[in-house]
Image 1: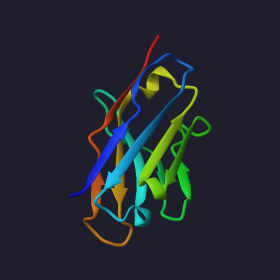
Image 2 (image 1 turned 45 degrees about the horizontal axis):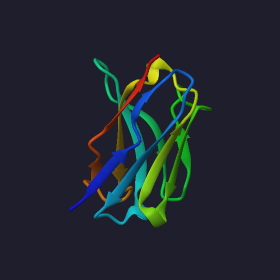
Image 3 (image 1 turned 45 degrees about the vertical axis):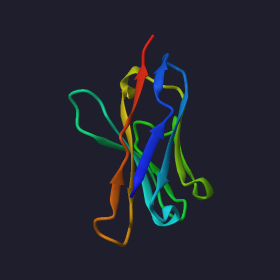
Image 4 (image 1 turned 30 degrees about the horizontal axis):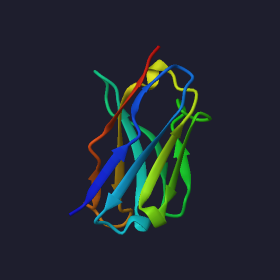
Length: 118
């Protein structure tokens, strides 16, 4: 059974920082492309950052320079380090694991709430 479990969300003041974690089980973690998405109330889910199995990263323009995605294959965990948080970063953050070569091997976590407010 595949599980992705996010943690690390919470309430933080503008300018603050958080680190989200997503730990996977039931998959060959190192083979997967990992992504963080977010969905704010009334908005579509958007891609925040991605990291390939080889470690290549991409970040959305809205978070470049503030957020960093990383992975630890030994711990089956992907991270999203977030600095200089803004109210517009408020959303539910989801991790996603996607096998780059096998269609249908795509899994989601349950989400973790991040609220940026004073």
